[in-house]
Length: 204
Image (cartoon, rainbow, N blue to C red; front, top):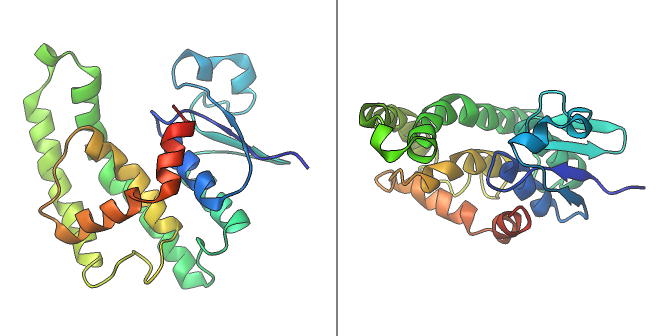
């Protein structure tokens, strides 16, 4: 049986799925497709017609969208990462979706300004407004983690990985959320995982 094949590079949303597949510990093939011209080539469009990364091929299963890929990987290959009951499963989905709906839109406004705009054309007002907007979801996360090491209880799970993977860009663009002590403590624990470092290395 062929190994799962994961497309993408670490300097993109594909880091999320590189982290997840590294955390499962399975053998896989990494195809370093970038998010520019390579993802628009015909051979890659045959895998993901959207022309975006990441994508996963695993036997007869082909998936795009990082959160879907990660939930599939955890459920299929890492039972200890994936909740065993319906309520826990729903919570894992909840926090995965929450990250891309509550954190990512504001985060990407900052990313666009700081990483893709020339310094003399950056809009400080957009950055400030997005940083202010992030205070509400970060406060929600901080409250959720009060008295709990991880989102779903006593063990690191795919919920933690997915949300931390989304929030990774906050560090890249130097958004300081150290004032949210529970959230920053949790994030540091997530990023200390050896699988995170391996994903960064393999996807470079």
